[in-house]
Image 1: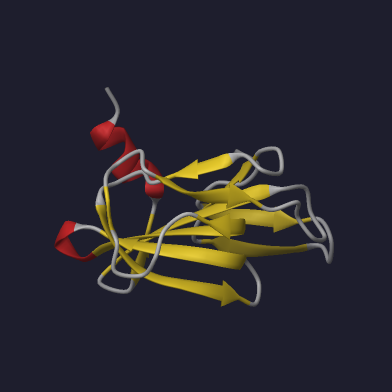
Image 2: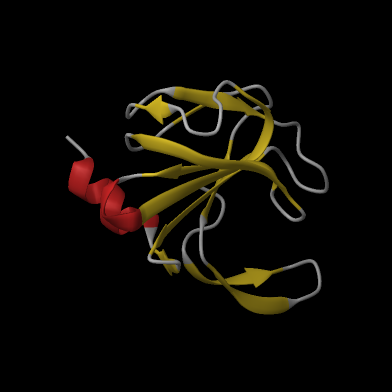
Length: 120
């Protein structure tokens, strides 16, 4: 993980900001899999995160997977935890990385809270 949830320093520009996601470095083409089961709510071209897949799970939890070069799913498709969503892009100004964000009721939440709850 190159950046976690919370306050982080942006060395390019020299400022602090509140990061509402995890940034996870990986090689271009790395398979991206769903952390939770749910329904593909949207596939969008985000201006800052690139190709992004949104998966809605129970209880209003939505997981966003950004920085992709391609997708293997369609809007409305049911996916299981671990299902292949797509592949990571080469990266633009930064090294290739997955932008992984969670929200509940349109409020960002720390992915660590949920992932610790499902870890074996």
